[in-house]
Amino acid sequence: MQRQGLLIVISGPSGAGKGTICKALLQKNKDLKISVSCTTRSPREGEREGINYYFVSKEKFEDMIEKNEFLEYATVYGNYYGTPRKYVEEELKKGNDVILEIDIQGALMVKERYPEGVFIFILPPSMEELKNRIIKRGSETEDSLNTRFTAAFEEIKYMSKYDYAVVNDYVDEAVKKIECIIVAEKCKCNRMLRAGYFEQEG
Ligand SMILES: Nc1nc2c(ncn2[C@@H]2O[C@H](COP(=O)(O)OP(=O)(O)O)[C@@H](O)[C@H]2O)c(=O)[nH]1
Ligand SMILES: Nc1ncnc2c1ncn2[C@@H]1O[C@H](COP(=O)(O)OP(=O)(O)O)[C@@H](O)[C@H]1O
Image 1: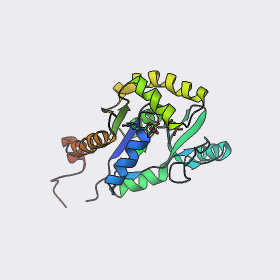
Image 2: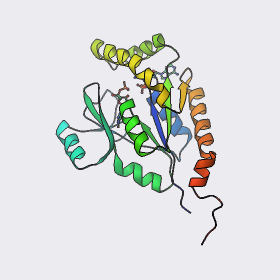
Image 3: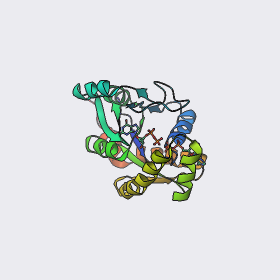
Image 4: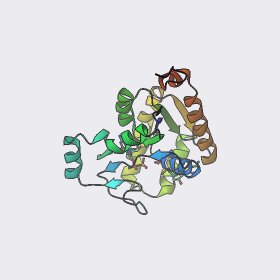
């Protein structure tokens, strides 16, 4: 019997360390898949097409919306971001676990379609440390830093919609916690029953 993979949704405020954690998680777990999103924002220094994002024009993005090519999409800090549907559906069908690193609006949309997914919220150790990390990353102007920092307070209010919260004090520990969550999720009785364990064949 072919079992569906687990859909793992990771969100949290800008600078909490989602990207860093996902990268470390993928390095350690070669079977995990990550969905590469489309965005209309400009690439940051060092970001690569098809690795960090697919960087597309607003026109192209809107054409993809029309063609129903997104599993979910949202406007975040004035740009479109969206999860291409095909890759995620195909990988889950093959039985592979797939990570989506997306914002809260997108996560809530995914939750409606895939309530069986696992929803993880990444928290910074403190708001002060969050600000330091965004500054240290050096990717934002004063304005966009303030936008992200102000949004963080609003975003954290949505934590209750998620199944788990992981504080990113140390990357290795946060990664270990996410690995444990994945294992625990797969042992849930209702998931095992849905997957058809011990059902009589024929
Ligand atoms: N809804 C949605 N949000 C996304 C997607 N890809 C990235 N995001 C979110 O968009 C926000 C901005 O991402 P980014 O521009 O990389 O900035 P960062 O969070 O400061 O690193 C973050 O909250 C991401 O999780 C997507 O496909 N869909
Ligand atoms: N546990 C950590 N301790 C110290 N710095 C961290 C930690 N996790 C991430 N960072 C740094 O914080 C900054 C923001 O991390 P990033 O992964 O880009 O966040 P996000 O994807 O949530 O916006 C980066 O410069 C990253 O190197």
